[in-house]
Image (cartoon, rainbow, N blue to C red; front, side, top):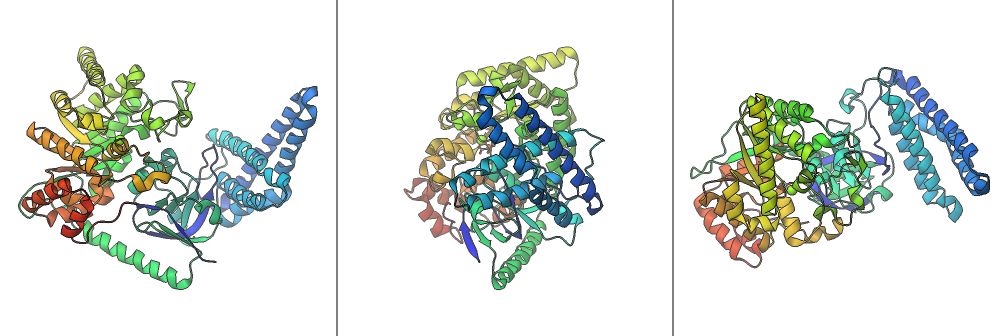
Length: 594
Ligand code: PEP
Ligand code: MG
């Protein structure tokens, strides 16, 4: 039966594929195709993992103290029964044999199917056994992870992308939530679209989805409950709509739209070598936001004139809390600098915290999700200053990378004068050290993110200390309006058109220009064509965005006349309802904020 689920559109385009449901396990589940000839080896991995868990559970049973015997032993027996259920084992193997899933993926897929069956049970006791099932599955996944950690002895064949299986159906991923770190792992993976139950339009998960340039809908609330494993799903990333089990006529319509948007992309792509100059001659710089050095070639291919934001925190993720040392970071930054071939690379110091937590920091368990309000907690420069060794290593790596080409260092979330002084002291110390040690390094311009209202209201201070400013509109909106950007429940209040937000952006651009300092916008607003004219009218000449957004923004710039837009920007700033001005002036008006 056809079903429609509404959420927030976060990454444009249409994806059509079969649903892969991912349980929100505390364990990272690798998803890749195996070569069909490796299926027996993969099944054997699974069998070995189950055997290990069985031994573990038996050992636990033996260790239960006599006075607790009854309840705990009964529980462990339930776990053993679930683990040794042959029907479950066979169904799991079927995912490996029929769909060529790796063992972990097969396990997660089968868990999803069973979890649903448990949910539908009438009997309370049986329904509650779902938690046991999840615990057992988690143990098996852990055992599989241990096994595949033994490099060289692993039975896993080479990882194969979806494209290598031309005959396979495309896949879309459906989950309650996907962390930014998980999302990062899906770069270049088999999925052609994403749907999550939770998340806001400017959460980091959504941002990474956009950087993958894959249609995505977040905040679709019930999606992972309503969609079943293997259902055919259409993701309409423009409308924030998910259609489950669509009738043929709807499917055909969306296939047509997919072809059209491909043609449009190819048309825009032809602009990539054209300079972004308005009709009245204003030159605009279009830069790329990246997460990893490997994104640099894609940025160049989209026509980026440099990197305006390298979110270095993604180098710190998916490594079980172990931090990358100076050398590893230096190599990553150097690779990005070299790949950009003489174009500037702006490396932002680590912005860990809020919706980008690390599982562990400095050997301690540190789970940000358990702090009361992580967006306002130990995040970004606050964390860096609390971990001076880590911060120094990062600054050293950035300065060393600057010996290979132009580098700028950008500091996130600065709020207080003493944070500026402390950061600058570290930078000075690192420069002196490198000089003393005779280590190769280059000149680095130092800039500040303006993403906390306090910063936007202390511009003279910031302009005295920094070479350039970069406006992080995602956080500036979040902190100005007191709206958690990752919370879909308040997504309707996350309003980039709010007059207070526009006023802070306008002041930052104006004061920066007056002081003769570069000002860039590197938040999502820079890549949103609804804001291109306004930002140009406010005097912005440097935009940094996902590479995929560059062609469409460039097209807008090529059609603009700055002298007209200045008057328009003034009207927008003065309006109580800025959207009404935009609708009247900009062709096509403005989409209503989600
Ligand atoms: C921002 O806040 O606008 C920004 C670019 O930083 P991030 O999205 O990584 O917080
Ligand atoms: Mg930010």
